[in-house]
Length: 500
Image (tube, rainbow, N blue to C red; front, top):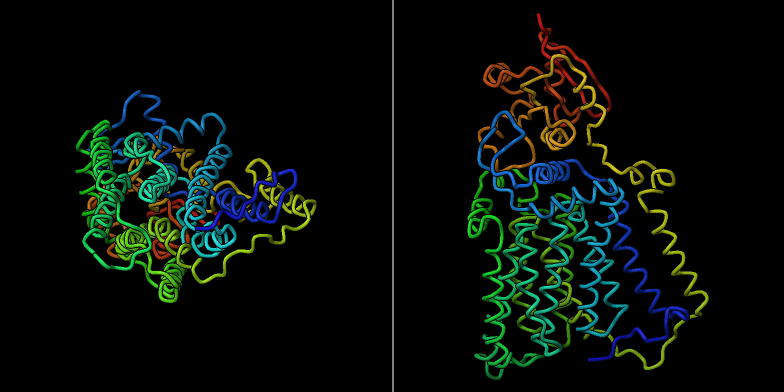
């Protein structure tokens, strides 16, 4: 394996390799900074973080809706919610965006380091991450508990890779990382999966005599150590407020019909949408590189990528995890198609390189959340996404008497929980909390189907509607004298039932 291309010239006399590295880290950081906070998954997590701080405990039942009030609700991501609310209390949305940028940069910076460790080809690694892995993944870079799991996942992948390649033995970190992961996000189950896949692949190598593999199987003593630390990591999953109940939560979530059939993220990827098309293009690129590579891919890399590909083919939200494990395999095999780097190569002018790095730093400066609203167009300069009904909710709060049985767009439920906790919601993005039948009623009413039956069944006294997704219902209510329009903007309409 060749030595890394970054030579220790120092940042005061930067080379082109330093420019490549700075470009990668800058673009990793810039994308989250330029992404306004979307409403659906962000605000209800913030609201639960606030409840944890105010009550000193993790809520065990629903506190926010009138349709499921008091029903058991498993709040697995409590630690991420607590961190998010603490950050908001300290510095508002700008601080949350800064931390989100740091999380993404840490995760993909670690992935870049792992790819560099495997190949020593900095420029190749940067190109693959920026042109392939980043477009594949950045739909998942919004602020929510999943983001806090990204660096941990890549740390697991790095520690296991370094160990099996004989580079270092830091497996003792795995149980410690798991204690964090199991309290941050439901993806914690992928930790033992990674350990198990590495063990299976390394054991399989020992039963393939004569097979052409680029790396020898793991020695028995190393395998025993991995089994021991893997067992401790698995036990560490129990170190959460509900103990083994967290495994039941994951099982129930994955088998929930409302989650698997109604949530776009849990649907299989398709070429009919942009993210699905990017995924299949990435997959085709991987197949081409593996086909023409001049070396047989490592079986462990293949098994990791294949297992996570199976998950990605089943649900769009799993594509980001597939991207993490597929990138080192892709880079390693792509490196075999390139000539070995020259011992002495053009490094550019230190002054020009420093200017380029400074320009990248200026882009980061412009993207800072304290500056971008004044310097950039609203589509990327705003801190919150257009779907956040801030003015509409403020209008709702001025209504007297306050509606008690409000119907509203699902995404609005998340912001209502945060901004108007005194206003009970009909439904919100906690998909698994609400029964499938209620979701069907929500969809039907939003499309103005069977309106009179549903109005009678739920006894709604107000409607906070999305002008695009619920246009048919808006048209219906506008023609019904029993409903009065009280507020309207480009994205939201508020109707209140007439007192007459």
